[in-house]
Amino acid sequence: MSKKFIIAGGGTGGHIFPAIAIANALKKELPDAEFLFVGAKGKMEMEKIPQAGFKIAGLDIAGFNRSSLLKNVTLPWKLIKSILQVKKIILGFKPDAVIGVGGYSSFPVLRYAQRRKIPTFIHESNSFAGKANILLGKRATKIFVATKGMEVFFPADKIMVSGNPVRDAIANNTVSKSEALQFFGLETGKITVLAVGGSLGATSINEALKQHLHLFETHHLQLIWQTGKTHASSYKKAAANQPNIWVSDFITQMEYGYAAADMVISRAGAMAVTELCITGKPAILVPFPFAAEDHQTANAMQLVHQQAAIMVKDSEASTALVNKVVELAANKALQNSLSQNIRIAGLRDADTFIAQQILKHII
Image 1: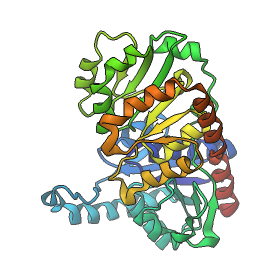
Image 2: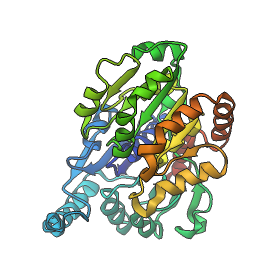
Image 3: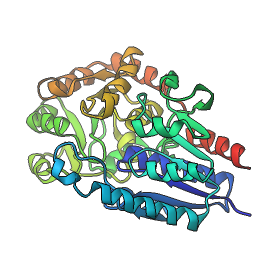
Image 4: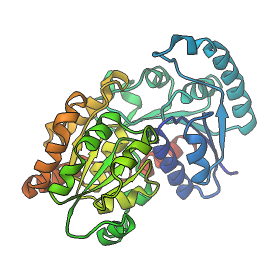
């Protein structure tokens, strides 16, 4: 009889792409397995999961809005409705295991599964665990974490250090550099910088680039610029008629971005950091300072301490970021050193490890 898995969570690419990687690894181990994803209606998982070939059910759920307290008026109703939806989904699908990858839609799903004594597994991608995962961890079967030292958040006997699962197209990238540069319409022989602010964009990175775009031409640099959706049109306008700059709100085939890049500007979300470790790219990290428990700064500092990345504070990005890019582009020895050190920091094949451990506990 085939096994059934529910994978819950989402909100950002940092939760969605590991979820897809885990599902594909489980599918490789058990080709006849059935999967159902559960996410939040209106969030990017509702689009990205079906694109990856999986079914998804959406919950009427929202997180607490700190910037506008009025918007929280409907929160209790949404919470009750989502709990009823979760009950219907789990009783209807009858999963053998439920896997949570973070994001507020994962909490009610795992909590209800735990009440039904269904094995639950958590993947915590950050080096600073979120409150929902800490609560769920007490009754989870196993907790997969990206880094050592997570005993401060979870029961030690449940922790397994797995690293973060990376999309297969990136982990096993077969795109050549020349092919990738051609894809973006850029020249060979010039240092190419990839700038990514996460799937939703990064204002400080985008504004710093916008103010100093002329320096890329001055120093014979090329830029692949993923802006995110917010204010994308103004960034496209700023880069118009500059052949050394490719700009778009989203790069669907990120493997081309990494293959083309000599160095990367990025936020320090868990998945962004993991992909940089796997691809071995010299990186300048600009952590988002308002992420929960400031976990992005913790992620970035782990690499800085290993001399595996450069960090620029979000508040200093407008004046310091592009100058750092120019300095690094001119320092080949530092590029090589950062590349070597960041590769050492990465754990490979996390998706396969997680899949095999889950199956050990349910078969």
